[in-house]
Image 1 (cartoon, rainbow, N blue to C red):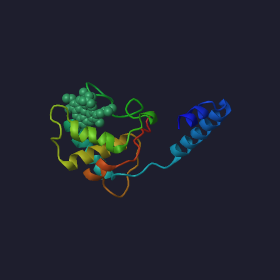
Image 2 (image 1 turned 180 degrees about the vertical axis):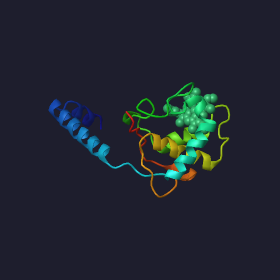
Image 3 (image 1 turned 45 degrees about the vertical axis):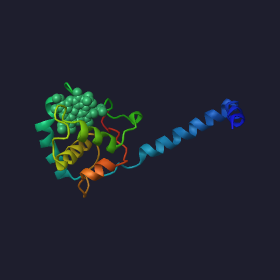
Image 4 (image 1 turned 90 degrees about the horizontal axis):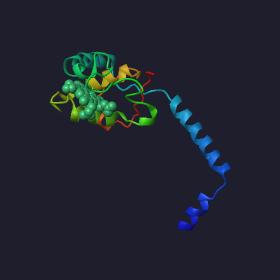
Length: 146
Ligand code: HEC
């Protein structure tokens, strides 16, 4: 086992480079995959209103961040953050709003997640996002906003 490891560490750099190039190629393919449509337009509109009432005082009306961090753009969710929808949803549904965590309804949390997805460039579709689906979603959350 150890012997095999040390042998592979002595491999020529050319091989390492070939591996890196192949990895970079597969990242490019992944990035080109279409974004999933996880919520409905009506849901994002409802989430906008809920966000205004419970979140915008700290995160900003345009999600730009005030006392709380920005919830849009690369500072929020870049590809290297490697976030999933579930990871962000856990944070907002379990920790937010700061001061009263978990105080909103399941529907309100799912609607707010839809609103955040819409502002980060994810498309609306025909099926509403549920609390359970958001909490289990392994979809990558990478902001499309530069
Ligand atoms: C009183 C101010 C305040 C309110 C209200 C508030 N937040 Fe936050 N939020 C914060 C702060 C501060 C942080 C960063 C520290 C932390 O994670 O606890 C944060 C972190 C977050 C994060 C994690 C961001 C990241 O980059 O990981 C999300 C998502 C979030 N808030 C969403 C919401 C949503 C949705 C609401 C409304 C339901 C809300 N917050 C209400 C202050 C607030």
